[in-house]
Image 1: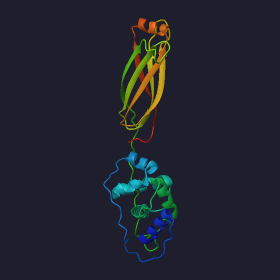
Image 2 (image 1 turned 90 degrees about the vertical axis):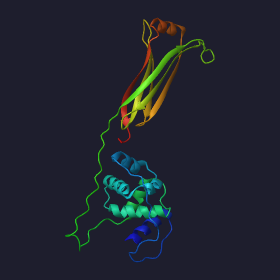
Image 3 (image 1 turned 180 degrees about the vertical axis):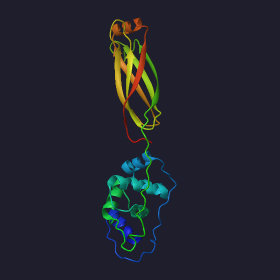
Length: 245
């Protein structure tokens, strides 16, 4: 069976016609091994969705089974996970697996024969249990710090020389990417506050810096100073994106 799987893998990815069939003996191509262990549904799902085929070789055997099980569960293919792992191992070892990991899996899963039970073992050998993939619930969270002020007399950038400025540093402390609405506010006595809003994306575990620089009038500066020069920055998580880790 290994020779047949290897022929499919190499022919599909290299475009070279393979000749010769042999017994079920081991292939001379060494199989790729790795040390990267995937834990949790997030890394597994992300690798299947956006990973590069070159990342296959660094995974442990258990992690490869998790990746293929996730792919087969989403695709609904009847190809066995063992056959698909073996085919991708051979394609990777021969340097024939190119593009994204999802593309490689799609090509091989379409070409490999569907799993059919052998008549001699139907009653004695049960179907293999699917590899369970743990579910991680999204938990968006984060912190931020900010500074805000106003500037006078910089006529090199504005005709009036007055500006409202602010910056904020956001840190995503949750387990999923967030889309954040950041609003800088400068109070105005006797009128509506001056506001500016930006929307940014912050990946889980990462930080994002947001800056504001607004041209102001003499009247706005006077009204702001009369409001004790109060200013602030507010941050709200609008929604999440990506996969929880």
